[in-house]
Image (cartoon, rainbow, N blue to C red; front, side):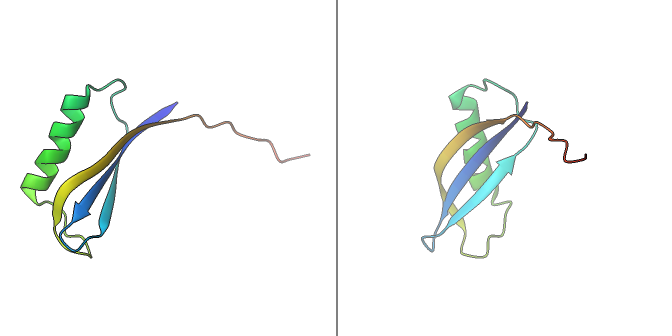
Length: 73
């Protein structure tokens, strides 16, 4: 199973920026994840096409399971 966090931020121009953090720690406390998003905003470490990041909009922990399917004969 793969786990990643899908972070969505708002920009000063009313657009959104999505960031996917892969190989994430499962069951990360909400406060830790929110603090990470706030650090991203404070560090201004991305240069989005549509303005500067101003706020955290949403956060999801996504767990995926991949099952290979044999398509050969």
